[in-house]
Length: 379
Ligand code: PMP
Image (cartoon, rainbow, N blue to C red; front, side):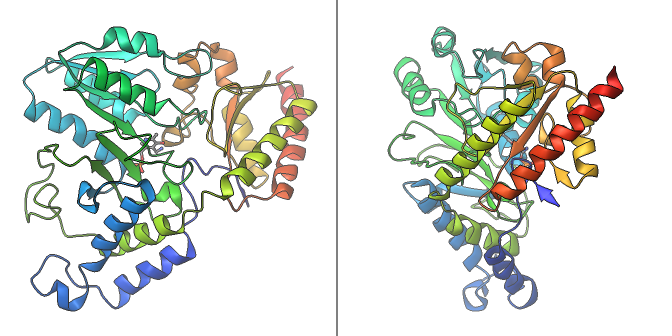
């Protein structure tokens, strides 16, 4: 199998599996009892917080709360807002993942005013329009760091500075699910205006079903789940010690030095595919994640192509990974003004540090063959 869908999920790293195995087989004790310091069951959470603080250069490991992943972290943000804040304006981008856009729509029904910042034709948010939208009533600005479909990076430092300057009381959140582990993030330097940040371990070679929320010291968060008082009383439920041990190992294993090699493979792949096929590569003039290529081949449905590739043992993404199987074209491309037919023809190739040039060559050859077959079918 040639796996080119690493924005959907990644292979769990060996070190993460080994770390988890110990907490499944040997140290399977409860992390929240008074004996945890003796059994060692309190270690994974501490390790996970320390590893995330190092990876993102956060000011303190206590700024991390662990959840089942980014979907939960993103939903929590809106639940906390509803409980805490009287009412006001919420600003999100037009290309957010559904775990942001759907709760945003839901709180609109409860009296919040929700505005979507448009993106330009490369998928970068319009800072001028964001500035116009910021008012003293703005409670929350949530803009994703990297788009899951195109890989486009948003100017998080500039957005943060803008929010601080125009509306200092607003909370600035970024869904960094696709960015963590792929680009350098520094919460005390270039991202020092980010108040909250969501992530999922399985996007950076950790296990599925574990992730978290960073929140800057001094910010208050209302509890999401009530019960045993775990996660400093904010998110009750028996601590997922194997998951956290895996997350910690994966975070420690992130190697940002691989980014240049990955980007070079992606660029070679795009150069080859442009020479061989009638393709449009989306967002190629924007700053992108090093591993992502989203393109449309004229006259072929993206979903059909992805299924034929899967039949040939090559896994790529179509649309949003979370809605794979759906025939809807990626909403990000539509928001960029790409026409419906072209958007519907798109597929996404997303690499990891494990991807080889030979795998990409096989994918290219197969794409070329399938292009001939699928085009002659549609004639
Ligand atoms: N945000 C973004 C940008 C994503 O790509 C995803 C996963 N596709 C999520 C949030 C949700 O992550 P999870 O499914 O791990 O909760």
